[in-house]
Image (tube, rainbow, N blue to C red):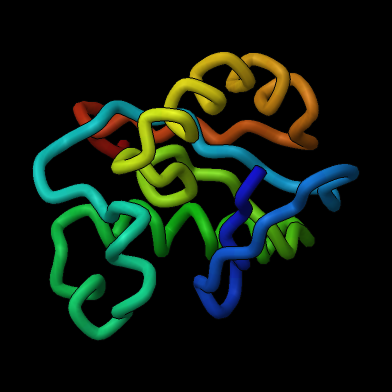
Length: 110
């Protein structure tokens, strides 16, 4: 399992016993932040999906979580083996998370 650091937006692989983490549930939109984008944060900040990632990370950090899992950038979808593993493990990852944040893009704030 690969997790995103909530403060510096770096990825780290955890083979067993991941630390406590938050998870983001969301719908995919145009210009999402993908796994390959994390390597170049300067470019990543220009993507439309960066705000969602940044806000999720900020919320996780404020809630005391150093790590967060976001499918768009924590899964290397160029690897069919990794994608298959992630799809098979996703329910377990949600269940093992400490908290799940939902990002609903078509909801307007009050």
